[in-house]
Length: 116
Length: 114
Image (cartoon, rainbow over all chains, first blue to last red; front, side, top):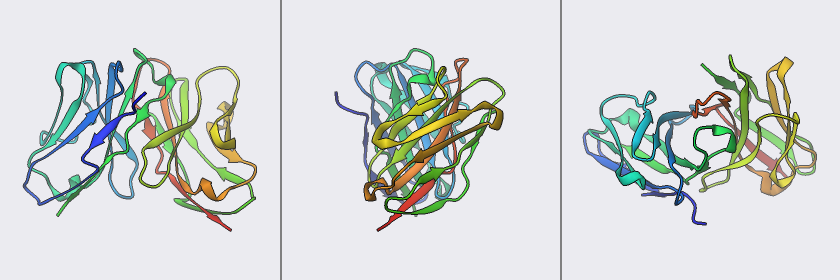
């Protein structure tokens, strides 16, 4: 089966610009997660979709970040306007399990965002 | 809130020597525990996981980890390091009561010395 696909793999933008990251989960996976790793720090949870609904968005840093999941398929994460501290690697993961993390997620390769 | 501590951001190990990566967690409820590995330019790959049952868990590529509740630890080991083990390793915890979030440690960058 195809894995979790993220694009772009790299993005360099100027402060104040807008960037949209995309994640295509494994087909049939209802659960989709976004995580972020800022350089030198832990990978941190951003939010969790179940199908098209936001189950938990408590990790979103501020209202410059907007995540959507159209029709319960792919998801986008938009940063508008981007700030320097938004630089980092954004990971997407999906899971077939309906409610537990016990199965482990399948992660994508990540999008490396650099804001200059 | 759950948390994970991984000490030593960079770990050097000689080829053929024991690999030991330490992970201590904090959780107020029974945990699920995971080790993930990230090879250069790739995504996070699940090495092994503990959910319930046997506390010694075997994973891919010869790695294993033991859940020790009394020590709140889940250390990762491999008896003999191979050059291909050079990667970054992350310990993570979630809980058994429906919280799907993973809380990660800071990671260990493993360098294998020939």
